[in-house]
Length: 512
Image (tube, rainbow, N blue to C red; front, top):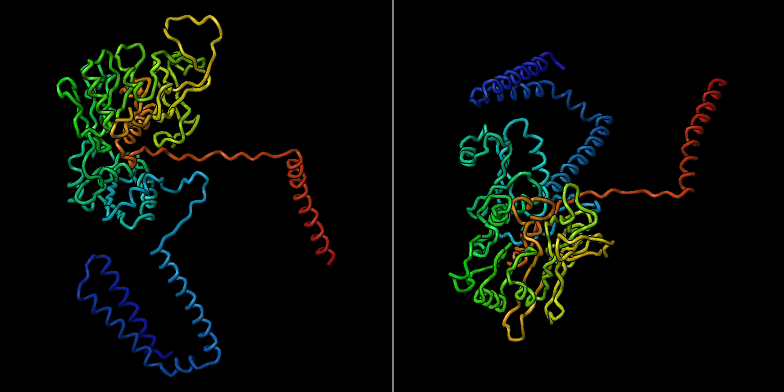
């Protein structure tokens, strides 16, 4: 290579380094830098033209031709790999091979996305280095949604860089200083915030609220000592009412004596924990509501004289008005604190609950039974206790001998026509306890999920059914005595054989 060519290449390199350094330091793209890049390119061309004969002789050599053929093949392989990776990035596909489908979305989530006709944008605000771990968890969850539906669009926002957008979304939030990650779901101009932890249940819940049009009204009957939906006391229902509101239900109180009937827009009517009797006229209006295809959510406590037993019996269920107790009480609770651990797998309300592992906690619950004269009404026994339970008619009653224990039903679902003349089928979910809905107990076990699922089923909003977390199951390897013996022998033979082999090799090399 001639000195002129070397000088041209060196100058081109120095000018290129200077131009890149200036652009990096100033952070701006000026015309001067473009000029420097052009000069550098011209100097490279000059270096190539000066010694063009040398390059031509080099390219026409046999060894060069073979090398170029190999280089072309390598280049083609690289291009092929790049194309394959590019196509894979456009059409991402993964398979979940875990037994519990830990890396897949539930049917409830996929059903929501099947109905999407427009893009849903999820904005994820993440601030502070301490929130990076949470951001990765959110990203991993949202990737499942993106992989399933092209309508799911995710945008990650740095609040410190996009300050105007952060002010627009976060400025009014009471926890904007304490929370590190915020997720918002937007659809058709409607914005809903997803609550932490940002798992599938939280994201799907926000997705439902954002895409749902209209609200289903749930009326809570009052005037008979029912639990108050506005009370934040231990026995109040404020948390339950808030949970329903967060699921896009509209909650309203109902005084039957004033309305004279159940409102026509009622998606369901809830009667929770009454302590006094209903008037005959009120029972008549409730009966007419059920006869016309109404939806009833009833939770009664034993020992209360509410005269609702006849109405419940017409729905195909016997309210025994006794007390369910157990020989295996919960730690810290008495014998009347009952665990519901057996679930009907045929009902959408309870099919996602794990037998034995999931539990509902009930206080002073009464036994429920399918009515003997229920006719064509279908009754499902939703929740049962374990086999260590029995009933008492009076909690002051002394147990003098070993009682006969059994599994006892404390929640039912019934459906059918009250009689042959009824124009439509009713649906009813009945509980032998109302305390599990109170602020004190709602978040224990599956209590909240059981209540929300019941309302969702009654109001025919099945996409609101609660999503249970997926937990990995432990895998047990059971070995026979022969298998254990084989493993021990192999474990001993392997190091011995390696030691003998290494000794033989060493002696052969030494003899050589």
